[in-house]
Length: 269
Image (cartoon, rainbow, N blue to C red; front, side, top):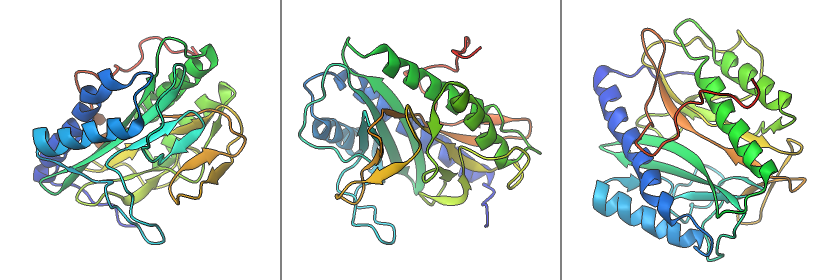
């Protein structure tokens, strides 16, 4: 494993790319409502990235080994979909929960973030709770990042918080280093043991993006080659930020005006 330590120039470029990714979510938020198809959200985001930002949608035609090229510019994961949901012509329904995952490329650098949206005014309380706990899991993970700590600290804290709430943590998908590459070392697990893994060092940039299931942790891949769902059809939620290890702690790079702030009062206090 070779973790890239970013230079000052790299970090400035990453700040820009990450801010742009977050601003795509700010832009699309008012359109996430009942009756709107996810392929329309994809079109809106694509046009905003390309025409307003001058950025490139990283997922479009992305094809890691063993995968067919991803056909859209964003991922939209609804209800029991854990990740990599492909936008389509089915309208969102009142009561749905949906994760929108955005990665842009600007001047050769990737900015990556995702956010949950509650669709309409009839979202069940159990879905709202899952969403809130998952959001807090992300921040619990971010709070572990400081020079001298270890990547295992992130996973241990997230797993402890999620399981305390009665939920499970997806094992097969994780956070990752990011920069000029979409997915770089290290893998950032959302479960595990504190004090293990590589040590945090200033200049490291990576995502923290826990996928939390209301039921069991097991997953199932759909026939499109991309969409991952919960095997037991329970709800799943995900939040994602890209973070930088600084000399004194952590800087969240994917904050924007429309991004929910770090919780002041925690659901599991």
